[in-house]
Image (cartoon, rainbow over all chains, first blue to last red; front, side):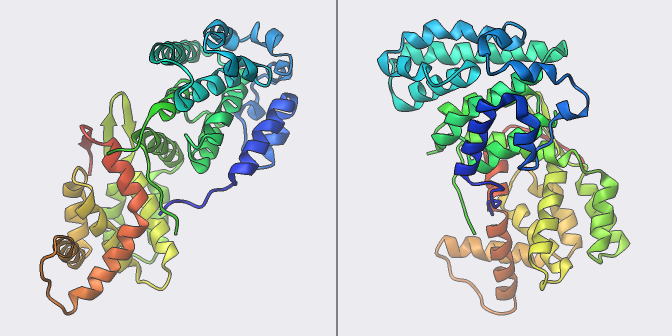
Length: 191
Length: 172
């Protein structure tokens, strides 16, 4: 039996939108739906503060490498270029990737290149995890990156919500969550 | 009762989430839960042993036994008018019949709980699916119970069958 979702799709998307608008209030936004961040138990909160100014914040975090994606995204054509105006950071990358992979808006080579870059980013995050340099900014960016996957029904709402809970609680490594999210973008129902 | 069809990647994600959630539970928590259900000590101890079943999938170790026990306890709580022993027997019987990789490990425990009736009912359901004739009688009750359990466990069964191919199982 499928579990009853703790939140509806609309509620989860709204929550992510609010988090994107108010990254400084991450504890408040996530706390309203019962998600407790490990940052609440002592990790530096200062890193959260800068997400609104994505570029400067990324200069301080592992997520800085995500900007390496921008040229690849621009190559995919005008629709994706338009998307860039309304997304940022890892969220932008996942948004573009979701549209490209699921929307059929790019040739196979471009899809493969984007997926490979996503895989490499997950490896970088894994390396950062091993050196304990994952920041709250990285986790927040990951949550924001799930928006389009949820909207496109690539990840079930309940699974996405519970994955956010587990990532915030530190029970699922960020790199593993990224790898599984990427797999959800591309997987198809079994024959 | 909602059902959904999962892609392999979604099943893998769900398995990772369930596994992370189960890590918060200790063996003694399970024992206390099982005792709260009114089960005798010897049954509770044998069932607690299920919590030690793990599956190695790639680099990950999945607490398969804990996942099963959590769902079994949810099943028992969702059917308060069904005797706990029958509900657990039906639940394990459903898993023995539908998850080939784990079935052999659960079968002795299920048999100890009197799930032989459940296993026979599962066999009858298989026969019905194949269009073969079935007997009628007391087993029809067991058949109903195992149908209820199979429906309840469908998501977990799908997840196991989609993700545990090629996994190595240890425990119990």
